[in-house]
Length: 349
Length: 246
Ligand SMILES: Nc1ncnc2c1ncn2[C@@H]1O[C@H](COP(=O)(O)OP(=O)(O)O)[C@@H](O)[C@H]1O
Ligand SMILES: [Mg+2]
Image (cartoon, rainbow over all chains, first blue to last red):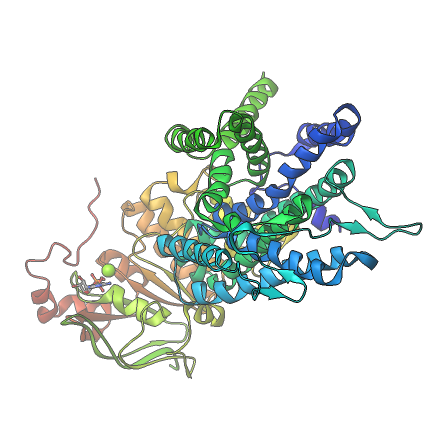
């Protein structure tokens, strides 16, 4: 246990020492206090942002740490989202089944990722081809789900509904002694997601600073040398792909439970591009940068959508171009490195 | 001497080019063996066949008597082969110390890992550069770092492709001493080299490769005295030579 906790800091993560963890504690305390000075709608909206972050963190692991750009995070997002819908519409929310449905839906995404990843990585498909194939998979799934409008397209009680998508599934429901706690998209769901996010974030910090993460960045830097050090490169790539895709699946189930709603467009081209933008803008090579960057971009995007979503998309595209040109390692990474340099200088004085 | 590594009728083409042409070759257990030959003779390709980066069209590679022809590179490495390629293969974006850690974490952890990293940094003359990104090192330092990673695996047979390229005569000599020290610990070494002073310093046996075939084999003195060997180097920029002191 002590060994694991030591891995919270390391060469693969920005932020270390008492100053960083004090800042972390303050941010966490503010996040816990937040619902008591914000209205229910805003809190629910923040929970909505939280839903997406898991998918971004997953891409950060696959792309930022492992060096393999997957353009298909949304395939696993959509698959899991639909799976949650089908399961809960058929079984209902009693006895905590929604929680089991999340686990099953994420496991389904992980299984699909293992199958697809096996062919990709053991077939030595890399670079731009990996991006093309993963993108094709998500677009194919979108097309497939879009043509399921007829009444024949049903799984048990769950109608797939083609382009209009599936709705009416129950929200997350936690069984409790004196009656179930329903996590409606407000304060209750906010706390549930906040807890899940903190656990995922810290877990990823440990993972990337452990031996596994060392090998993953080695593969990103020079796969041939990694293999010549005796590592089975394909296994590590597959491992990262499965974990990262499962996190996309988790986002999909949480999003579906949040809005009680999922459509094929969640797997479309625009949706597929967004995680890449979030992760690139914040800084793909670091989990903290991805977390902060994703929340900032989501917030900014929503603020812009007030003026029309097409403008918001254009601004996102511009933002990506600016980042790639001006701070290719990502804005949050550049900022955090700057702060670290300043504090070092101040300490030296 | 029993062979640690052996090839039988090894064959490889690139298009119409017969780069490895029925090569029967062996390295003795505990031997220091140098492979020389003009540019384009097929030396580096031969190494990639030995480590499994390339698949031969015919023939076999045997390691300690086991046929490893079908094994993947990482499986060969786990059996005790280790390689430094001609173009230095390091992790450029990671620090020098982190590069070594990734090689050492196979068999060490915690305090013994840290102390072995410090020992290696000292040994490789890279102590000052420990916190630098490996990509910023000089060519010679990159060579050292890669050699450091290769020996971190505690190999039984170390393959070195032009280990002293980009090194000064003094650094080249130090590399030779390091090779000899490893050899005293029982590591067999197969090195591709152009620098005949280095070959003379380390080699117990020399093999000349020419257009994909073994052209000559013998002691360093025999090879240097061999006029047919000198002839194949004529007009070559990579003729056997000594590094000149600047
Ligand atoms: N991957 C490759 N594809 C095509 N030709 C190659 C490849 N690698 C090497 N060659 C050719 O094979 C020949 C031998 O190359 P190499 O093994 O690098 O020679 P050496 O290391 O002895 O200088 C050269 O003519 C080279 O151009
Ligand atoms: Mg060569």
